[in-house]
Figure 1 (cartoon, rainbow, N blue to C red):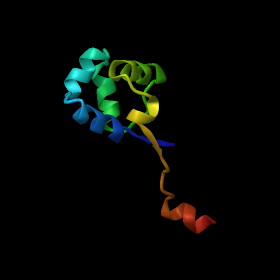
Figure 2: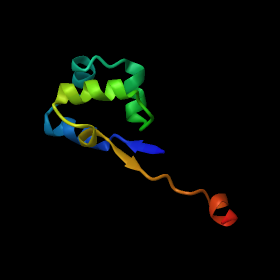
Figure 3: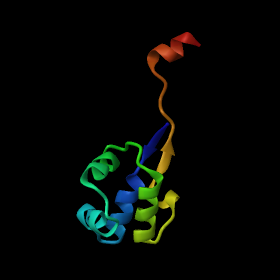
Length: 77
């Protein structure tokens, strides 16, 4: 499963906020911000704090992105 936080970055732009502002108001650790920037999995409780801080819903900050099959997986079918 893959997730994308592009919606979060767009929302921050719309609200004229920086990533540092988000980190402060949602009390996010630096390593978690790194995970968000890399589109890696983040604890649901942290995503909840982000939503609470930005007054939004999970779908407003992230989306599921279908992972592409590797070349080998396609050949095995």
